[in-house]
Image 1 (cartoon, rainbow, N blue to C red):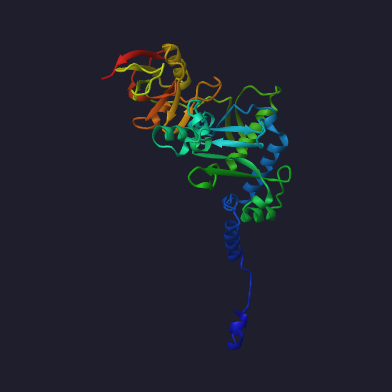
Image 2 (cartoon, helix red, strand yellow):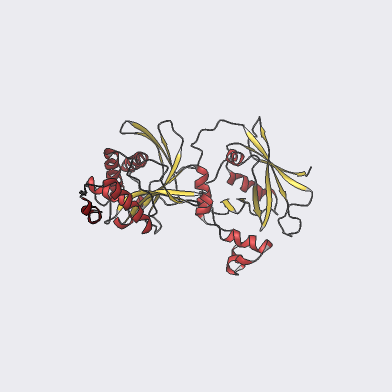
Length: 374
């Protein structure tokens, strides 16, 4: 501009262009593949420093050495809703801290393993087939991200992987790497939108880390087998339950529910199919765990030898695995949809699980009986 305007007697001066520089940096970052949004930009300096100090302590104390990777931590801050955390690093994955929005997300993520019945579809290359074979292949390709919908957690990033805005902010605050020359940053991956801003605040991460490390410090055993405590962290109460089983959440609803399990594909022969014209009636307390219903089903009749519960193309939980795995309550099923559209896999065949009605009086235990279809 100076060369063009100078002949006309117009003087051009250049000053600081911080806003333009920041905008250009963000555009350049996107072009270079930095798709993760900045996480420190709208947080005050004190909160950023407090978070990074706690994150550095997390990696320095190595809590994954004293916790089990297949167990989850229930967390409640003040009177807020319970959410759940998992310390990573025990099973060859990168050390970090995963946070789950709710218990159903935990169940979906952990139990999203393709059924052995559908696995051959992938091995045989049936993904391009049509009809039933195509559906088999679709089941085989389901992954934990699709099941959970979104995953979030504290992870380590190389400086080159930080958003430029975050890198400059940490430099201004003289914040260095948290561990192994890498920076601790919370990330959230959404299956539909990709990398998105985290749902949990930096302060929430800090409170979870500080409460977890304090609780572990007060216990001698390794691995730690139980935590049930409420701690004061910077004037805020943080309740921890480990291992969590999802029942930490208060329940205020119907006493129980009635379900019907019925077959809906009469063309598939199976030694465990429900006889034509019949269905299984299930009555259970609202707070009963689904895995207990699955166990009751498999002992109810010798034709029911497995009971893995599915949503369409997404496995929710597979109770053929360890009994310590997470499982939802019957009330959680009732809240999924109205009415819930669920299916149970039995011997490779898909059967419908239909919610009938809430019960004013809960049965003392899970009840099952054969009933005719109406």
